[in-house]
Image (cartoon, rainbow, N blue to C red; front, side, top):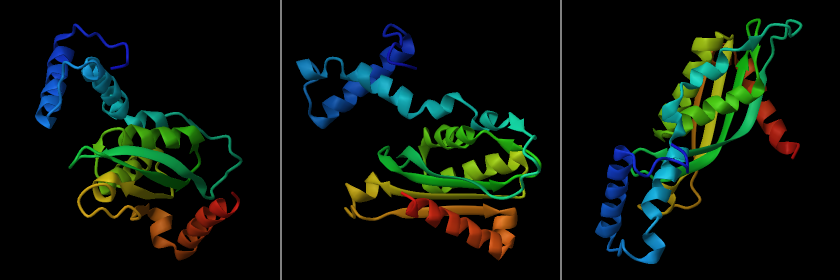
Length: 200
């Protein structure tokens, strides 16, 4: 779905009726000027927010490169923007992901790691599951020596409703292979993440 989606498509018509129903439930006048095009805009926005349902993020990892002079140390892409929606309240949670792996003879394009994050984030999610999905995809497709995924986010369902703790952050992590079993590799990872932040 894009902003050019077919307004006459039966599924879109039904979905827009549901949006109007929610607006009426809130107490709004769905016939007023400012809301006339809101159902279509909501559908277009949802098409962007939840585009991850239309792809298999693992496919971004299929093309790899072996001409890397035997490189077998940490590959880290840090501070990848995370924009997702809580599956419990359908409100956003946003933050950063740090994704690392130790290759076993082949590497993947750096942008592909960010695309994997987006592919899973642009769905209804919980942060714990998102962390696991990203890590599992790298393990399954790249078969590296180790994978590390660390995600830090603010959840609007906690910051702007409920307990209203606007300064709270949630951190989740998944470590496999060398990062899990080798303390020196784990320490190097944490130092690299800290070093990356200090260089800015």
